[in-house]
Amino acid sequence: MVRFSARLSGWNKKEKYGGDKQPEGIFREVGDVEGLAISLANQASLLGLRMGRPREAVALAEEAYGLASGHGLVALAGQVKGILDEIRQAAGR
Image 1: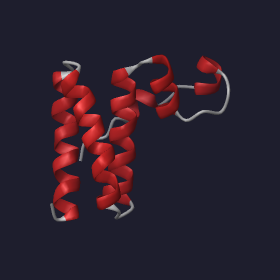
Image 2: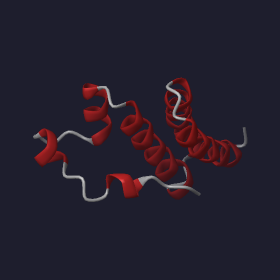
Image 3: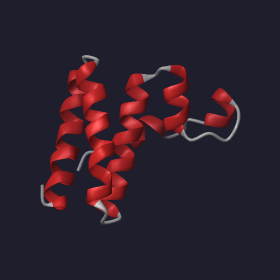
Image 4: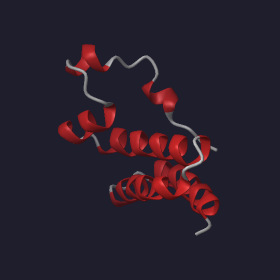
């Protein structure tokens, strides 16, 4: 399982953007497609593979993959595709 949390570690959202918003909402707000895709993939991985709720995680992983592949983030799309495949397998899809 590939995780992207290293990209977000040490990132202080309160300092950078102010407030108590979650990274996903901030990335959507500022139009950071790469950050949004990473945040969604992390959420999908945690929900689907660590918390045992893969059916709920599929939509998050699909959105992350669609964003990465649709914006030419080839390496990221490949990593997210691996997570999506793992989650789909766990969900029996």
